[in-house]
Length: 193
Image (cartoon, rainbow, N blue to C red):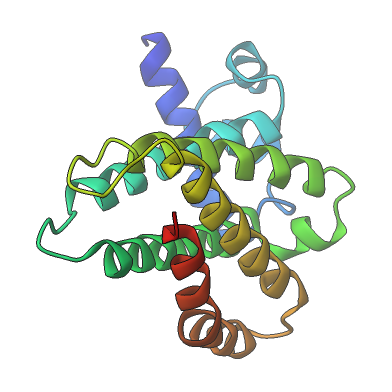
């Protein structure tokens, strides 16, 4: 097997197991068994189970962000476009936490805060570099800073209600509240020059 094929096999197996059982309840042995490789082979390509998760999530995030950018509607005004991008990105962040990582890991693991902070920072940089490539959006020298403000603010709010919500119903209510009551003000603030 080629290196890339082995890595993909590991990530596919991990993704299936993480979605089914959650990150916390999936062992490296189970990933190896599902990928039909030796446990030592996983450690040849990834330092830890957390590294496997990180690689899997970054692949998912890159594809999702590329999809958001490629499906950009040039006829849409900047305010609507940024609002849509932030909502889709916020849903992406929630999906990552809900489907891939699992709330048990997030709430109980001592490493989860550092892991999520690192992942969140990488997502932020990816979004900023991707959004600034859109040629039809109004830009000036302050555009990257304004965009960073919008992404950081939205990200902080979304993660805070994701961590504090008790049920999926609470999360949905918080998303609706964020979209209708908070996000419009953040977008307007970010668009001011």
